[in-house]
Image (cartoon, rainbow, N blue to C red; front, side):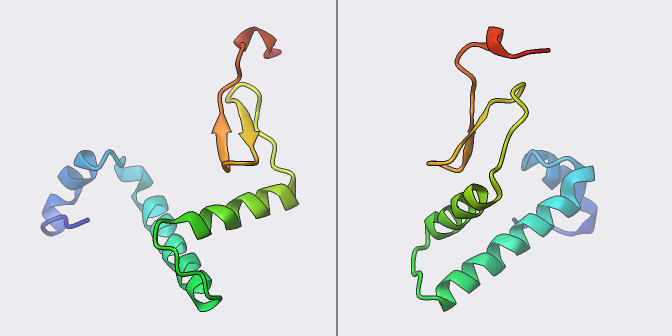
Length: 93
């Protein structure tokens, strides 16, 4: 993301739908994804679409037995995403 200098940072973050308070988290996430990609390439994974990272996340989620608060959905181990609950009436409050 090119921002055009420090004085344009806040404007650029709004355009990228990143709250200024989340900027540090965004940068950490980008750097982590780059490091994971480099590690996967070093292991012979040549995918450039993020599928290698997705496989890594899915594997780690299975190993750690990820659970999601039912209010937000359920963890889909096949895709590595949070899936919506079919019927919100089944969510206990």
